[in-house]
Length: 247
Image 1 (cartoon, helix red, strand yellow):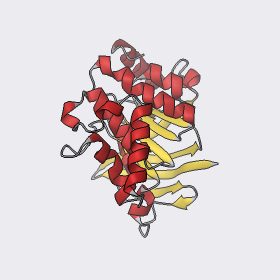
Image 2 (cartoon, one colour; image 1 turned 120 degrees about the vertical axis):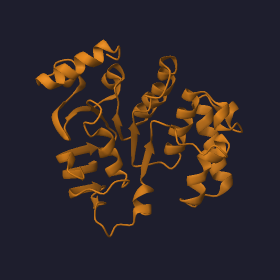
Image 3 (cartoon, helix red, strand yellow; image 1 turned 180 degrees about the horizontal axis):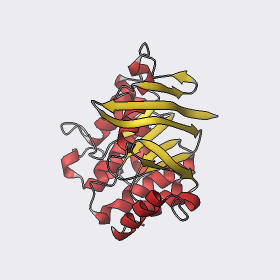
């Protein structure tokens, strides 16, 4: 069963075409990894799925429901989605546990006691139980990003989207964030990730999609796309990533 389906999506910003006739299907319990140069459309695609951007043409479906329909209840759709950004986006005036509890309580109507217990369980699982009452500015970048991921999975999303979640981190902190994503993959979380970490992509991806100028121009397993790319543009991109030390 496909949890997410994207059909012939087009998105423009003025005269610039950012996504062009893009189609993608994401089966349940799989991880789809988006790779490509900056400006290739990865982040815009994730923002369109999360309804942060409006598409110009095409359709997007979650569990068979068209969420790109202008009449859709955006808040209802977002209850099914989790999104983690490059810049953490934690509320600085709220403690870690209050950040995590916010959506379960206010959006999903879960009792505070239950939401707190579940938040503490997640923090314990991912080695952050001692940070529950800290404020975000007291945490390292890696810890903040892990909290942001925990906040997103606390609502049990149908699809978890991660947009370059390690790009703002010191290289030393990257693996502690990627380890939580590996655990979620092992749990069967359905994920769509944009990343430049090719070694990590190889570990978690069921499908890798290389984007260029708003199109998916090469797709397949990590072995096919990352280790044996067929297109010259894919080869050139991976060569540059290798030179940057991320392959």
